[in-house]
Image (cartoon, rainbow, N blue to C red; front, top):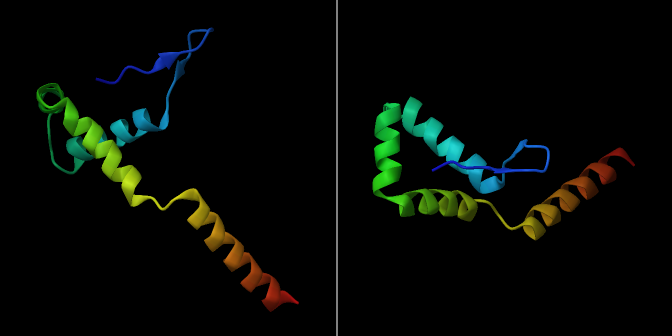
Length: 83
């Protein structure tokens, strides 16, 4: 279920979705106390679970323009304090 692409030199190239999957596997292993075989079964039985986990994490993140707006606001506040 985790198959990162490889570049021309053979190195693995991970995308955000791969990293989210790794974090979900880590959560299942250490917080939910799954075994490695249990994680394999869980993902093997329900591949939509993997997609849902990645999508829900992505949904929790604010859009980039909102983040940028917040950063700009904070920078203006800091600038006004030091002037």
